[in-house]
Length: 107
View 1 (cartoon, rainbow, N blue to C red):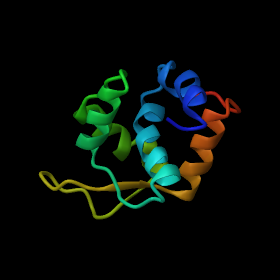
View 2: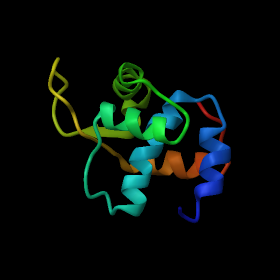
View 3: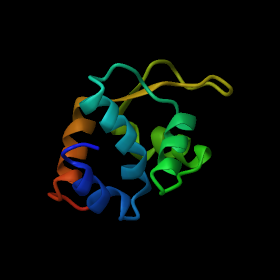
């Protein structure tokens, strides 16, 4: 429940871009939780499932380490078995605002 909820649904959840779906929970934490904490790929997977657009954990992890890597910052270097907490970077915030605002097409 936020001012941007309808735009988020229309421009992110209703579209096929997995990267945008993975970045959405990070954007919400940044904008509405004052960037208080980072999220792991597993947490992102749970949130997307609750939103009705399931992104499985391995797919979220792959997206965060490849295409979405230019929009996020991890709290440590990725190592097998060690969860990394991701936060949206300044570039990621700008990107998500443009996507939610309907200004650009998804990657």
